Length: 112
Image 1 (tube, rainbow, N blue to C red):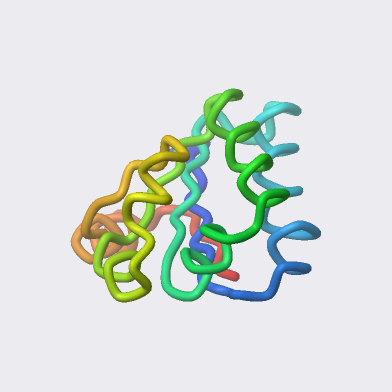
Image 2: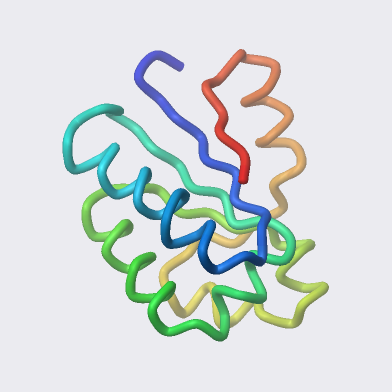
């Protein structure tokens, strides 16, 4: 897990998304702070992302520069936004087991 960062974004707070989560993920990749960045969209953030065009544009930028963006399928199903997230190019899948594996492997994880 060297030089790999997992960002777990759960907040429905738009300001947190723009001024921390997305800012750090974009700069972390562009400036080479991390070789591998995965952003996991989980819970209320999936609903927020499905309706906010500016956040969607930022997700596209992240995907374009190589940030891996995944979303929790159980959460997206709960909010009825699975297709919306998939249409953004997000890998939507059940994330409980992958997150557990990241934790067990002592991955670097930021949560918001």
